[in-house]
Amino acid sequence: MPKPSEASNLQQTEPKRLSYPKMSLRPTKATPFQLPTQIISFSYTPEHVLEFTNSALRYFSEPPLGAQLGYGYERWIRRPEERGRIDSLLKAFDRAKGEGKSPVNLDDVGVVSWRGVMTRILTAPYEDRDGWDMNVMLVNGTMYLEEHLTEAKIAEKNNLEPRHRKMMYYGYAFESFSTSENPPGHDSAQLTVPRSHPTAPPGWGGDVDTNVQWCSVVRTKLGDIRLVIGGEVDCVRGKYTGSPDTFVELKTSLTIRNANDEAKFEKKLLKFYFQSFLLGVPEIVVGFRTPSGQLTTMQSFKTIEIPRMVRGKPGAWDPSVCLDWGFRFLTFLRDTVRASDADSIWRVSFVPKKGVHVMKLDSAEVAVVENGEERVGLLPRWYWDKIWT
Ligand code: A3P
Ligand code: MG
Ligand code: MG
Image 1 (cartoon, rainbow, N blue to C red):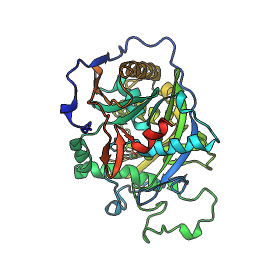
Image 2: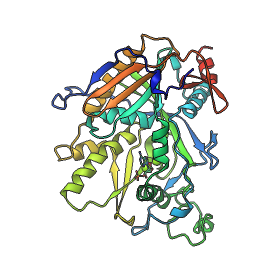
Image 3: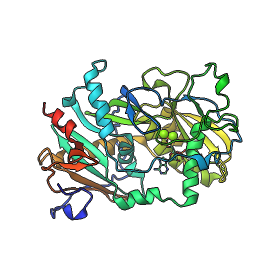
Image 4: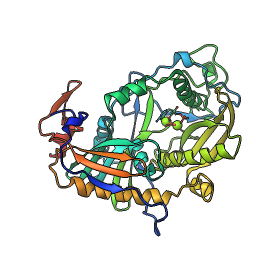
């Protein structure tokens, strides 16, 4: 099968289009979104090996104000960017189906995707800068979505300007300062000096290794579409209960100095909000920093209260516009791709202020081999075979 990344694979048929929602037309009744339930969690080890443990789970611990978020930058172990494959999500989903504790019937699931993809879809009505592309397969009534990244885009992400790379690091350093591998109250006397570095400043939770991640997979529902969504969770507050009720999302942002900064921050809150909302994360802790990476203040937000906070403000947005759009987008996508064989791949492209268009790629009938593993379109062969058994 030709690689879906090659533009020449696009068939010369007219793309199907869904135009941008009109902001003046607020939905009268919001599309309901069900409170997400965790079906499984997993960790990535420092070798980035997936294991069904909570070894990478971290606990929130108050970061010291004044902390320098550039600390440890030269020791950052950075995982290279890669294609938006959903293989590990499928591995986890497949295991959750078999576990019986929280049985999920694949026949009922409308969409399987990473949380980042769903965030992009839902926030599209307010996105006026960055477009995106996704690949889609519809197999037995379930849509599988992955972000489509070209080699050029991956290379760009891996070759950030030093200034951007440093700013990105501040976000991870804030995570380190705000978390511990032990729950609160744990006798961690021997751990006050993190193993990773003997001269670490107070509150440092260990050197940053972006191979290591803790992920939660949830099921939820948008309108009548059942979703299975996986994503990284930064830490839990207090204890891990096995459900998202103690999950915490950590974010950094530039200290707000004037009304203009405030409006920018309120706009950013849209992404913070949906990123957290989709996994049922109830709390977002924002660390405000100076341009040179010093932590100045911190603020904790209750995810569900954010829409009311921004209502009527200069950077205002309305989550019901996003949910309504998301539901229409997924329905449109399903109706469009339904007219093809199970192994067809489709490409959805979003153009800011215009909308989305969908085109069918060449048939994925012949399995490909990628990194020594056989695939059928977006799916690993082992998963594809399981669908039919
Ligand atoms: P901040 O969000 O604090 O800037 P996440 O917030 O999703 O847990 O991600 C942790 C950090 O990864 C972010 O910290 C940011 O530094 C970096 N990051 C995540 N998504 C990114 C993106 N799309 N572009 C650039 N950096 C990103
Ligand atoms: Mg994170
Ligand atoms: Mg975060």
